[in-house]
Structures are given as C-alpha cells and as structure tokens.
Length: 265
Length: 374
Image 1 (spheres, rainbow over the protein chains, first blue to last red):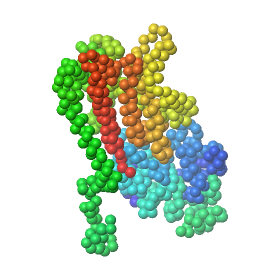
Image 2 (image 1 turned 90 degrees about the vertical axis):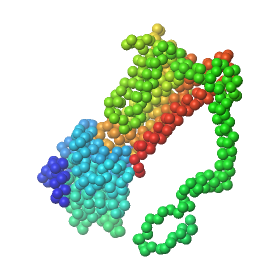
Image 3 (image 1 turned 180 degrees about the vertical axis):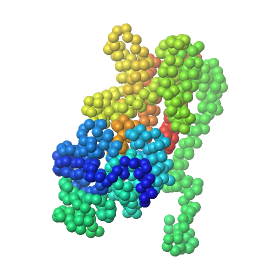
Image 4 (image 1 turned 180 degrees about the horizontal axis):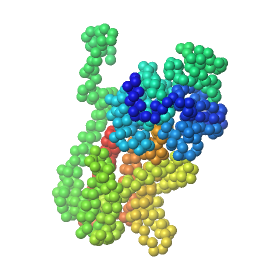
C-alpha cells in the first residue's frame, strides 16, 4: 500500500500537503430550488483539507444535488459556495478553475464510449491542463496501474465490466490531479461482486489523503474510511457526526429510522 | 430442442460441464436454407415465387443490355441492324457531352484534373489510416478553392469559362460535392444552435430550419434564379451556379440539422456532465465528446440526406441548366436517334445508382469501424 501511495504522490505532489485545518470547501446558508421545489434548504457545510465525508440519506433527500452544486453541475440560487478559495459564481472562469480542482465519479460511470480507456484518461489533462500527450499518457498509465487495470488501456469502455469501468472513471478523475474528489453513488449501479473492487480502490485513495465527499449507501465503507458522516433528509442536513457515534448513537429520530432500514437487511 | 438430452453422452459432476460445440442441426448451409428460405409454407412459397420472377427477368434484361445490344453505330438504324437490344451506340457517341456538358473541348483537361484532385482530396477525409493525414486534410480543405479556380479560370493563365457552359455529369458532381461538403458543418452548427441556451440563437436556428423544411427545393431554386435579381442592386452579376450551390447547400443543411439533432438527443446527459466536470469548455466538450458520438449515431440519416441531395441535383434542369439528365433529355430530340429514351434513362439511373450505392456502402463501413462494442 505504501508503495502505491508513493506512486500517487509522485504524480500529484500537492495532494500530500499536511492534513490541515484549512477549509477547502465552505458552503454557507445555501439554497436550491428545482422550479418551485425547494430541494436544498439552508445548507451549511465546511470541509477541511483531506477530510473524508460520507453523505447518506433516503432517495430524493438532495444529497446528490448537494455534491453536484460543488462543481456547478447544478446551480444554487442562494448562499455561498467557496471551493479552494474560489467563490462559485456565474463567472465561467471561476467555474472552470473549480472544475479543474474537483474530480467527480458518477453512478453510471459516464465514460466516453467512443474513446479507449487510455484516451478517456488523457482527454482532460491534454485539453484542460495542456499536458503534452506523451506525458499525459504516462500519468494515465500510472493511475490505471493504481486502479489495477493497466492491461485494459487500449480497450473501449463497452468491453469492460461495470466494476472495471468505474475504476477507469476514478482513474480518469485522478489524472486531472484534483484536490477534491466527489463520488455520486459510485457503487449503486454495480453487481455485488464488483462493489468490493471499487470500494477497495476508494479506500486506497482515501489512504493517500485525498479530500473526498461520497454519496453512498455503503455503510461499511463509511465506518472504515469516513472522518464524518452526514445524514440528509428532505433537503436538510439532519445530523452529522464521526462514524462511531453516528452509527452507535444517532441523535435524531429520522436518522434512527433510516439507519434501522438500511442496516436491517 | 428436446433431442439434446439424447445426444448428451454422459452426465457431468456439477461444475465440471465442458463447453460443447452446438449440434450440427443449428449451423451449416443446409440449416441456413431451412431457416431462411423454407422455414414455413409462406416462406417456401415466397422463395419459389422470387426465384421464378428472377428467372423471368434476369435473362431478358441481360439479353437487352448486353447480348442483343449494339455498341457502335451512327444512327438508330445502325443499331436496329445489329439486334433488338439496347442501342448503347447512342450513349457512347454522346458520352463526352454527358460528362462535360458544353465545357469547351480544349479546356476539358481542367475538368479531368479537378476530378483526379477530388479523389485525392477525398482519401484523407474518408479513411483515417492515411499517412500524414493532418497535412493531407489541409489540402482537402483547400480543394474547393483549387477546383473553383481550375474549372472557372480567368486568373493565373487559365482561360475564363463561364459557368453556363458547365453541364452534364460534372455539374451534378460539382453541386453534389459542394452541397455535401458544406451542409454537414452548417447542419451541425444549426443543430447545436437549436439546443442553445441563448434564446436569440435558438429562435434563429429554429426559424431557419423550419423555413427550409417548409419550402420545396424547386421553389428555392426558382427564387435563386429569378427573384433574387429583383432584390439585388441593378447590374450585380451574381453567378447563377453560385446561387444554386448556396440554395442546395442551405436546403440540405436544414435537413442535416434535424438529423444531427436526433443524434444529439440520443447522447445521455451523463456524457455532457462528465465533460463539464472534467473542465472541458463548451466547444471542447462538443468536439471531443458529444459530436463524435452524435454523428456516429446519425450516420444513416446523414448519408440519407447526402444521397437525397445528390439526386436532387437533377432539379437544376428547372432553371435551364443541363445536368446529366438534362443532357439526356435534350439528346432525345436528335432526329437520327429518336425513340431511345429507355437507353438514356437507364444510363442516367445506372450512374446515380453507382454513386449512391458507393455512399451507402461507405456509410456501412464507417458504422462498423466506429462501433466500439457495448
């Protein structure tokens, strides 16, 4: 593990900055509406550098929308979002700056089916970061090795299993050397036997000190990895705590109900 | 397949069953014929009927086109003397007219050269395994200007040939290739514009597309030929061929836009989001992520539009330009060769069929090549 960690640090030295007190994401009294529907209500959330956060909650609670606001896939209508010192406004330049620093992994992988695995990984670095092609390919191979599928580099996404595709998606995001990684239910579309390989990849990523926000229902992952678990319902943050007290001693009725439902089976 | 159990020689322990080849009854030519030609009573009847019709038609057609046909001769009577098949001597004698129209005899090498250069320009566009493809593409992009200079001349030592002397097959190819080359990029822009968040661009694109689709091409050509002179300042000499090229291109662009819009709508939202999340700018994400996929899906529709446009080039006859079909029609008036309309139309049909069939095969090749497995 430590060797892999070394690999990652070589490629993205700035990730390894000391686990700081520095706030990398600040969300202040943020609101969002879809038409008349008030989907996020007065969200206040501060994420420290290298912090690992798991967000859970029933479907429709706004947890995906929340992390999609962080890289402006969704627009918020009120309040402030500041990512890595850059305020998220309608200024396209700021949005671009933030998107360079924030990687995202989607539920349905969203790999580009017309490009090979390697081309998927080099697209961002070449066109957004202006990395020379050869260098971008070296970086891509490094991360593909890290997610343990370098031998698939020349294949197309459609030829891979779901778990492999999701690992490619993680490698693709890492190739941009992001400071923050957002995971939007990364294992929900996978067969049970593939969930583990993706979670293992995420756990080893967490070990490198990446700042991570994961929307997931994998409570085992939350217990092992998270510094903080956030429970959302109906657009509000209901409760947040460190994993042990969160699972052992939930404070709020709705949290208790949710946990009893998902831990029951 | 109840007999599979019978063929199974022995049973296997759980987890040790090997992969066996399929029984002979589900593969091979006999199976194929049974499945596809004689699968049911209706199927068998249709097969027999089809074979009967082919038997009736094909020998007669071959006789008419080749066996009894006359390939040389000076008039229709010469042909009749040789047999009662097709009189290809008529076409052969006028072949140059069919190809070059009224382009001056001495300058026809320019047309031939343009044709050769056209093929060279098409190679890097059509096939991606050409060496130095990037540089070759620059030549391809310059080709329209080179061809225009070669064909029209007037500068650089080439004699000026007015475009009303263009005709025959070369006119079809000029209009077809120009329309195809320009309608695709314009169509892409219109399709993207129609999806734009900016209302003014969206409204303009929708209005343009709906106008084009709502008006017959003949009308547009008439407008280009006749009406436009009323709107242009007196004395303006706006070449009729260029007007036709513009109209045909815009017409095809309107259809192209809708075909491509269909492709764009088939791209999942996740693809846009992944491109955005990566930090790609709008044009980058369109060019690198969305359009390659949307165009691939649209290939059948795009080629369909191309073929339609190519065949519509015969409509220039309505504004007095003689393309291959127009030349054929005009030739029928020759007293020496009266009554040979079948030969003319078969010839024109074969020419169009070959061109369109090539386009259609190329599109299949492209679809296959771009298929990346799902």
